[in-house]
Image (cartoon, rainbow, N blue to C red; front, side, top):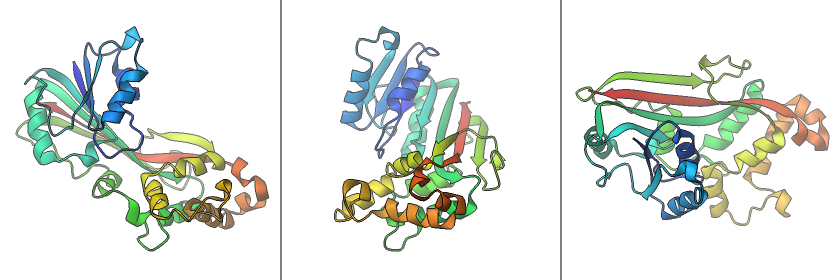
Length: 267
Protein backbone atom coordinates (compact mmCIF):
# COMPACT_ATOMS: atom_id res chain seq x y z
CA UNK A 1 0.00 0.00 0.00
CA UNK A 2 1.00 3.60 -0.36
CA UNK A 3 -0.15 6.90 1.08
CA UNK A 4 -0.20 9.93 -1.16
CA UNK A 5 -0.22 13.16 0.80
CA UNK A 6 -1.13 16.60 -0.45
CA UNK A 7 -1.36 19.72 1.66
CA UNK A 8 -2.88 23.22 1.49
CA UNK A 9 -2.49 25.68 -0.08
CA UNK A 10 -2.74 24.68 -3.73
CA UNK A 11 -4.93 26.10 -6.45
CA UNK A 12 -4.70 23.16 -8.77
CA UNK A 13 -4.37 19.87 -6.91
CA UNK A 14 -2.30 17.16 -8.58
CA UNK A 15 -3.54 14.52 -6.14
CA UNK A 16 -5.80 12.76 -8.66
CA UNK A 17 -3.21 12.64 -11.41
CA UNK A 18 -0.52 11.28 -9.11
CA UNK A 19 -2.82 8.69 -7.56
CA UNK A 20 -3.88 7.41 -10.96
CA UNK A 21 -0.27 7.13 -12.11
CA UNK A 22 0.57 5.10 -8.99
CA UNK A 23 -2.49 2.88 -9.25
CA UNK A 24 -0.91 0.09 -11.35
CA UNK A 25 2.08 -0.17 -8.99
CA UNK A 26 0.41 -0.45 -5.56
CA UNK A 27 -2.38 -2.65 -4.24
CA UNK A 28 -3.98 0.13 -2.20
CA UNK A 29 -3.54 3.91 -2.37
CA UNK A 30 -4.80 6.34 0.26
CA UNK A 31 -4.74 9.81 -1.28
CA UNK A 32 -5.34 12.76 1.05
CA UNK A 33 -5.95 16.47 0.72
CA UNK A 34 -7.21 18.93 3.36
CA UNK A 35 -9.65 20.48 0.90
CA UNK A 36 -13.12 18.84 0.76
CA UNK A 37 -13.70 20.27 -2.72
CA UNK A 38 -10.48 18.70 -4.00
CA UNK A 39 -11.48 15.32 -2.56
CA UNK A 40 -14.95 15.61 -4.10
CA UNK A 41 -13.42 16.47 -7.46
CA UNK A 42 -10.92 13.62 -7.22
CA UNK A 43 -13.58 11.05 -6.32
CA UNK A 44 -15.79 12.10 -9.21
CA UNK A 45 -12.87 11.80 -11.63
CA UNK A 46 -12.55 8.06 -10.98
CA UNK A 47 -16.24 7.26 -10.67
CA UNK A 48 -17.13 4.32 -12.92
CA UNK A 49 -13.42 3.69 -13.53
CA UNK A 50 -12.84 0.17 -12.14
CA UNK A 51 -9.12 0.31 -13.00
CA UNK A 52 -8.79 2.88 -10.20
CA UNK A 53 -10.81 1.02 -7.59
CA UNK A 54 -7.70 0.67 -5.42
CA UNK A 55 -7.59 4.44 -4.78
CA UNK A 56 -9.18 5.75 -1.58
CA UNK A 57 -9.48 9.56 -1.52
CA UNK A 58 -9.78 11.00 1.99
CA UNK A 59 -9.92 14.50 3.42
CA UNK A 60 -6.95 14.75 5.78
CA UNK A 61 -3.71 16.63 6.35
CA UNK A 62 -0.20 15.22 6.46
CA UNK A 63 0.01 16.25 10.10
CA UNK A 64 -2.88 14.00 11.14
CA UNK A 65 -3.09 10.45 9.78
CA UNK A 66 -5.10 9.05 12.69
CA UNK A 67 -7.14 6.65 10.58
CA UNK A 68 -4.09 4.92 9.09
CA UNK A 69 -2.83 1.96 11.18
CA UNK A 70 0.73 1.99 12.47
CA UNK A 71 3.30 0.23 10.27
CA UNK A 72 0.80 -0.32 7.45
CA UNK A 73 2.25 1.85 4.69
CA UNK A 74 4.99 0.90 2.22
CA UNK A 75 5.52 4.37 0.76
CA UNK A 76 4.57 7.95 1.54
CA UNK A 77 4.61 10.27 -1.46
CA UNK A 78 4.04 14.03 -1.37
CA UNK A 79 3.78 15.73 -4.74
CA UNK A 80 4.37 19.51 -4.81
CA UNK A 81 3.22 19.70 -1.19
CA UNK A 82 5.97 19.04 1.38
CA UNK A 83 6.91 22.73 1.61
CA UNK A 84 3.60 23.34 3.43
CA UNK A 85 4.05 20.60 6.05
CA UNK A 86 4.63 21.23 9.74
CA UNK A 87 7.40 18.67 10.14
CA UNK A 88 7.33 18.84 13.94
CA UNK A 89 4.06 16.91 13.52
CA UNK A 90 4.64 15.20 10.16
CA UNK A 91 7.82 13.25 10.95
CA UNK A 92 6.29 11.54 14.02
CA UNK A 93 3.23 10.61 11.94
CA UNK A 94 5.32 9.26 9.06
CA UNK A 95 7.50 7.27 11.44
CA UNK A 96 4.37 5.73 12.94
CA UNK A 97 2.57 4.69 9.76
CA UNK A 98 5.51 3.62 7.54
CA UNK A 99 6.71 0.06 7.99
CA UNK A 100 10.35 -0.88 8.51
CA UNK A 101 12.29 -0.35 5.24
CA UNK A 102 9.35 1.57 3.83
CA UNK A 103 10.08 4.81 2.03
CA UNK A 104 9.17 8.47 1.81
CA UNK A 105 9.50 10.48 -1.39
CA UNK A 106 8.81 14.21 -1.61
CA UNK A 107 9.04 15.96 -4.96
CA UNK A 108 8.46 19.50 -6.06
CA UNK A 109 9.23 22.00 -8.78
CA UNK A 110 9.84 25.72 -8.69
CA UNK A 111 10.47 28.61 -11.07
CA UNK A 112 10.41 28.22 -14.83
CA UNK A 113 13.43 29.55 -16.70
CA UNK A 114 13.87 30.73 -20.31
CA UNK A 115 17.05 28.71 -20.78
CA UNK A 116 18.13 30.60 -23.90
CA UNK A 117 17.05 34.08 -22.82
CA UNK A 118 18.84 35.45 -19.74
CA UNK A 119 17.36 38.95 -20.08
CA UNK A 120 13.78 37.68 -20.11
CA UNK A 121 14.57 35.31 -17.23
CA UNK A 122 15.92 38.16 -15.10
CA UNK A 123 12.81 40.24 -15.79
CA UNK A 124 10.53 37.30 -14.99
CA UNK A 125 12.35 36.73 -11.70
CA UNK A 126 12.01 40.40 -10.75
CA UNK A 127 8.29 40.51 -11.49
CA UNK A 128 7.75 37.27 -9.59
CA UNK A 129 9.79 38.00 -6.48
CA UNK A 130 10.55 41.70 -6.05
CA UNK A 131 8.80 42.99 -2.94
CA UNK A 132 8.07 46.41 -4.39
CA UNK A 133 4.60 47.59 -5.33
CA UNK A 134 3.34 46.21 -8.63
CA UNK A 135 5.25 42.94 -8.35
CA UNK A 136 4.15 39.45 -7.27
CA UNK A 137 6.70 39.12 -4.47
CA UNK A 138 4.37 40.08 -1.59
CA UNK A 139 1.65 37.72 -2.82
CA UNK A 140 3.33 34.32 -2.48
CA UNK A 141 2.18 32.12 0.40
CA UNK A 142 5.09 31.94 2.83
CA UNK A 143 7.18 30.36 4.20
CA UNK A 144 6.27 27.51 1.85
CA UNK A 145 7.33 29.22 -1.36
CA UNK A 146 10.81 29.98 -0.07
CA UNK A 147 11.23 26.39 1.13
CA UNK A 148 10.39 25.20 -2.36
CA UNK A 149 12.71 27.72 -4.02
CA UNK A 150 15.47 26.37 -1.76
CA UNK A 151 14.67 22.87 -3.10
CA UNK A 152 13.62 21.41 0.27
CA UNK A 153 17.15 21.69 1.67
CA UNK A 154 15.80 22.53 5.12
CA UNK A 155 13.69 19.35 5.15
CA UNK A 156 15.91 16.80 6.90
CA UNK A 157 14.61 13.30 7.77
CA UNK A 158 15.45 12.55 11.45
CA UNK A 159 18.57 10.35 11.39
CA UNK A 160 17.42 8.21 14.31
CA UNK A 161 14.47 6.91 12.27
CA UNK A 162 15.41 7.35 8.60
CA UNK A 163 18.40 6.29 6.51
CA UNK A 164 19.50 6.10 2.87
CA UNK A 165 18.58 9.74 2.35
CA UNK A 166 18.90 10.85 -1.29
CA UNK A 167 18.35 14.22 -2.90
CA UNK A 168 18.06 14.73 -6.63
CA UNK A 169 18.04 18.40 -7.62
CA UNK A 170 18.07 20.37 -10.82
CA UNK A 171 18.87 24.07 -11.05
CA UNK A 172 18.35 25.39 -14.60
CA UNK A 173 20.75 27.81 -16.26
CA UNK A 174 20.29 30.45 -18.95
CA UNK A 175 23.19 29.16 -21.05
CA UNK A 176 21.16 26.59 -22.97
CA UNK A 177 19.13 23.39 -22.71
CA UNK A 178 20.18 20.99 -19.95
CA UNK A 179 23.09 23.26 -18.98
CA UNK A 180 22.04 23.59 -15.35
CA UNK A 181 23.24 21.65 -12.31
CA UNK A 182 21.85 18.14 -12.03
CA UNK A 183 19.57 16.12 -14.28
CA UNK A 184 16.63 17.76 -16.06
CA UNK A 185 13.25 16.53 -14.84
CA UNK A 186 10.84 19.14 -16.19
CA UNK A 187 11.35 20.83 -19.55
CA UNK A 188 9.07 21.89 -22.37
CA UNK A 189 9.17 23.84 -25.61
CA UNK A 190 6.34 26.38 -25.40
CA UNK A 191 5.00 29.37 -27.28
CA UNK A 192 5.06 32.67 -25.44
CA UNK A 193 1.27 32.51 -25.56
CA UNK A 194 1.42 29.32 -23.50
CA UNK A 195 3.95 30.83 -21.10
CA UNK A 196 1.68 33.86 -20.67
CA UNK A 197 -1.28 31.64 -19.83
CA UNK A 198 0.84 29.57 -17.47
CA UNK A 199 2.03 32.69 -15.65
CA UNK A 200 -1.56 33.60 -14.91
CA UNK A 201 -1.94 30.33 -12.97
CA UNK A 202 0.76 31.34 -10.44
CA UNK A 203 -0.80 31.55 -6.99
CA UNK A 204 0.99 34.86 -6.45
CA UNK A 205 -0.61 36.31 -9.57
CA UNK A 206 -4.04 35.01 -8.55
CA UNK A 207 -3.57 36.67 -5.15
CA UNK A 208 -2.36 39.89 -6.83
CA UNK A 209 -5.40 39.91 -9.14
CA UNK A 210 -7.74 39.49 -6.19
CA UNK A 211 -6.07 42.46 -4.48
CA UNK A 212 -6.17 44.58 -7.66
CA UNK A 213 -9.62 44.03 -9.21
CA UNK A 214 -9.36 47.31 -11.14
CA UNK A 215 -6.36 46.00 -13.14
CA UNK A 216 -7.93 43.94 -15.93
CA UNK A 217 -5.92 42.23 -18.67
CA UNK A 218 -6.03 43.63 -22.17
CA UNK A 219 -7.53 40.35 -23.32
CA UNK A 220 -10.47 41.04 -21.00
CA UNK A 221 -10.87 44.62 -22.24
CA UNK A 222 -8.82 46.32 -19.54
CA UNK A 223 -5.77 48.52 -19.77
CA UNK A 224 -3.46 45.72 -18.68
CA UNK A 225 -2.60 43.69 -15.60
CA UNK A 226 0.69 42.65 -14.03
CA UNK A 227 1.25 39.85 -16.55
CA UNK A 228 0.70 42.28 -19.42
CA UNK A 229 3.32 44.56 -17.85
CA UNK A 230 5.69 41.60 -17.44
CA UNK A 231 5.46 40.50 -21.04
CA UNK A 232 5.75 44.07 -22.31
CA UNK A 233 9.06 44.31 -20.47
CA UNK A 234 10.34 40.92 -21.65
CA UNK A 235 9.40 41.49 -25.29
CA UNK A 236 11.12 44.89 -25.24
CA UNK A 237 14.29 43.27 -23.86
CA UNK A 238 14.48 40.35 -26.31
CA UNK A 239 15.20 41.54 -29.89
CA UNK A 240 13.83 38.44 -31.65
CA UNK A 241 10.61 38.62 -29.69
CA UNK A 242 10.31 42.33 -30.44
CA UNK A 243 10.94 41.72 -34.15
CA UNK A 244 7.90 39.43 -34.23
CA UNK A 245 5.66 42.46 -33.61
CA UNK A 246 2.05 41.59 -32.90
CA UNK A 247 2.88 37.90 -33.42
CA UNK A 248 5.29 37.69 -30.48
CA UNK A 249 2.99 35.17 -28.78
CA UNK A 250 3.79 32.67 -31.55
CA UNK A 251 7.51 32.69 -30.72
CA UNK A 252 8.67 29.35 -29.30
CA UNK A 253 11.00 29.12 -26.31
CA UNK A 254 12.69 26.38 -24.31
CA UNK A 255 11.59 26.25 -20.70
CA UNK A 256 13.06 24.32 -17.75
CA UNK A 257 11.98 24.17 -14.12
CA UNK A 258 14.04 23.80 -10.99
CA UNK A 259 13.09 20.54 -9.31
CA UNK A 260 13.81 18.35 -6.30
CA UNK A 261 13.17 14.82 -5.15
CA UNK A 262 13.91 13.89 -1.53
CA UNK A 263 13.84 10.21 -0.59
CA UNK A 264 14.52 8.25 2.60
CA UNK A 265 14.07 4.73 3.98
CA UNK A 266 12.64 3.82 7.38
CA UNK A 267 15.08 2.08 9.72
